[in-house]
Image (cartoon, rainbow, N blue to C red):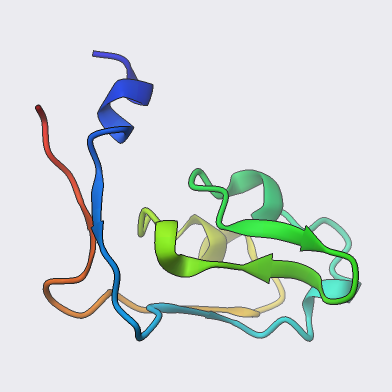
Length: 90
């Protein structure tokens, strides 16, 4: 089964309390803004005023953004129980 098909089976129980916070004051001076190209869910978008805009609702909880942010702008915690992305095989 193709990865695209498997990801389409994901479901979300969105928590009003985000499990990721981004200190966007670091973003305008970031030379590479790797979060824009490495997030598989495309939760990060370019913002002309603040550098990067983040929306956690579609997050796949992979932690990639925390790893690629060398400025320490991303704080990532596991979602509270019962919230976040769910995976199913069929």
